[in-house]
Image 1 (tube, helix red, strand yellow):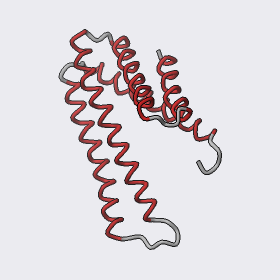
Image 2: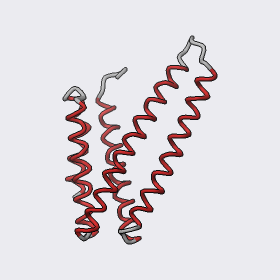
Image 3: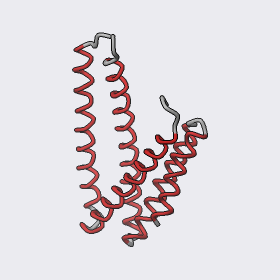
Length: 158
């Protein structure tokens, strides 16, 4: 099971750059990761059909929300780095706005996690929710490992 998810994760992060970051291809590959994650989890904890339908709804919504948070946060970091360029005076008002936005993204993530867990609690047992949390953490770790490897292969400055 882990090797199947890992191979899909590798596909998303290894093939994506080779395809010129085509957003449609990248989204399709990411969707495959989500689908395989959900299928593997379903088998792992023996979800009923009803549980699986609800699980798919909540998980897909959750993955979309996480992607939106990541995009927002990335834009904020880029803007913050732009303000802090050497030799250029940073605008204090912009910095305050960016720092507030960064804190807001983090707060939004926490609120989304609370909402998500409350939704899962409606149809998953505590053991199933704990297994989901651990599976999600493993997937995130695998994704980060792949990202680290990919960064190690890039030429300096990229």
